[in-house]
Amino acid sequence: MFDFDQYLGFLAFLTILTIGFWLMIFLITFVVPYWIGGALIERLQEIREEKKAKRENP
Image (cartoon, rainbow, N blue to C red):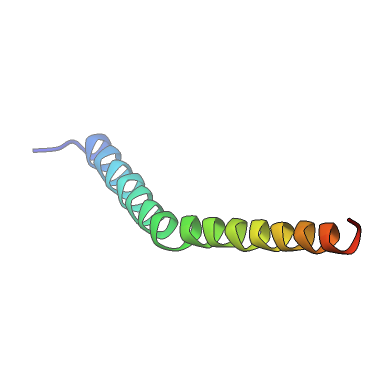
């Protein structure tokens, strides 16, 4: 069915496909929500600091 070179190519393809699949699952479920959550928390802290500065220095 396959020559040895074709078999190695097919295994390399499956390996890369599998690594890519799990990398995308990891990014979508952990990294992206962590990134968005951290950005939101940081922005809310900046808004609070701006409001506090405006109240102290009218």
